[in-house]
Amino acid sequence: MNVLPAVLTGGTLGAGLALLVRELLRPQPALGPALARSTPASVSVTEADWGREERWGRWLLRHLGRVPGVLVPTTNLALLGQGPGQFMWKKTALASLGLLCPVLVSIPWILAGISLPFYVPAAFGLLIAVVLFITPDLAVRDQAKRARQEFAHALSAYLDLVALKRAADAGPAEALEKAAGVGDGWPFRYLQGALRRARLEKIPPYQALTELAHAYDLPVLDDVADIMRGSATDGAAVYTALRARTAALNTELLADQAAEANTASEKMTAPGALLAVLVMLLLAFPAVIRMVTV
Image (cartoon, rainbow, N blue to C red; front, side, top):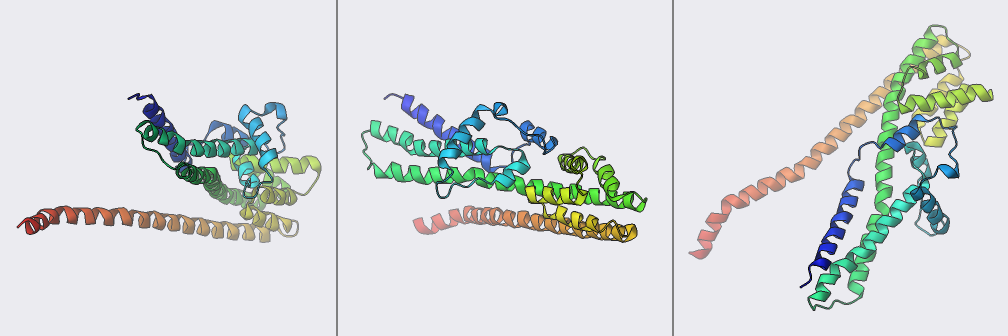
């Protein structure tokens, strides 16, 4: 019997499982999105800068964008520094792989002389394709959630710095810009880009922060803009409001971390209980066999 179909089938299944595990697990930060985060939001990317995957993905997006159920999380992708074309290309590639997997699996059965109804691999192929098609959406949602948590942690430190600058009689715009210039992470670079744009366009800095919060769905930044909107009246009152918001934000972050820790602990309960049941079955197996055979 020719082993080449079996080898190809095994390799295809292994590649599909590797891609699925890679999307479900928490990936390491990629260099491309990290550099995109460090670039101010005002820098535009032309079509000549698109990669091959982005160009093909944009073409697919133009043709599949009106299909029901095909949604692109543009806000989350913008926050992560990813293009919608690359996202659509990944979804289409995974769905195509899901359609091919049952066909390749059925090849050894056909070579062995076992015939299967055509609707069996077709049904399994559609099911696997749907699961793989929505896998990038789940991965992007999880990555965006972690990015917003990272931004909230950075914003807590930023609020402390703004409060200290404001207490030292710095102006509202000066306090915001100097505090943003202290950090080097991508949240501080987003803040620097928004405040720089506000200075160049001659708009209030709190307006630029509000637009940044709406563009990337960052509700914690909206609170900072609301506080700084009233900063022209009384610096001491703004200092108190900033410190109070910082304390509240730290409390929220600690509560979220405690909830995540409790969830992780609950997830470990089921494997521990299953292991205990297996040990009990292993200990009771000789006695049960002896009672049955006697």
